[in-house]
Image (cartoon, rainbow, N blue to C red; front, side, top):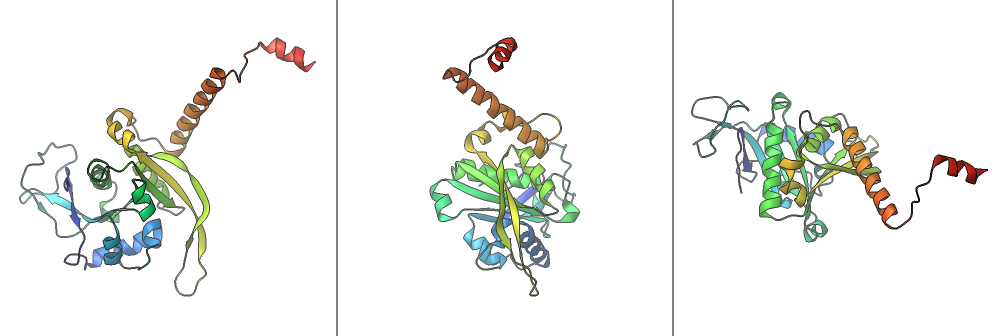
Length: 251
């Protein structure tokens, strides 16, 4: 498994490295915002990690005594590096037995607030996807987002990676509250990427700014509408007539 990119490295979480105040905070935030951690049968990070195909700590790469390199600076992956001891995030890939049989899995990530908007989440997700698609040979990877304050930012990350919006299941997940407060039902929005889309990601990835969800939905709707019209024409379901002929038929 490729465990390092330009600026981050993935360290698989295990019994030797899971005890950290930062990881406890990240895990608490994940349980509030991510579907899979919230639904974990045992609400502890180490138990969740054992059930995952991959649950890794995201750490920054350091080169000698230098700080993490600039995103724009080319640095060979072969160069010796050491990782910062302080974790900056968590990334996971998990699959239920039925999903595993269907060669599909779920992916999720969280990055500490002080390290957001720096491209680290994108690099960590790419490492996880590369492992899932190219080594495990999965057919489909999905990301699920509950309707909360972090949803839009997280969705932009995955849409930028080439994920496609597949729909929203209304009130499909029950989110319990602590302290005796009654829980609430949450909408869950699903994005997904296929193995073919991963293989062609450099061709299919949008140029310029990352499209938002509405741009992606509009593009998909237009493409599906064009395909439907072509199918109707092929099967003689649509007959093109002039506007005047249509008016005569009405009269």
